[in-house]
Length: 160
Image (spheres, rainbow, N blue to C red):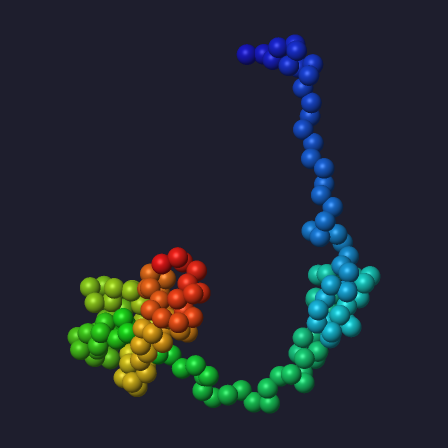
């Protein structure tokens, strides 16, 4: 069907005005940069991308880098209260065969990868377990768990 004459006469082409804002701006105000070292090196005549490409982060923050990289992690992996019985069953059934643990979906209900199985088994064998209360306090607990006491109960963002 053809358009009626009135619709054709009143038809206006839809145009959209280009927004002028942060995304459309070519140059950036260096006073908005909070880090002193980056603000000092920032060139107003260059774009943000060109400035960041010209930045050598290692040279800028050389004095803040550690003298040597630590051999052990600050927070070693631990096995949670819910995971410990699953890990025990996997070790009892498969021993050190992490690939078989990975494929055993009846026991491995969380479907851990081979590397995740190995990490949890080694932590469990080393005696590195943590209680449910410790997981809640550290903030790494699963969302469906209800906080039992203290500050964790007040900062529960999920409304449980």
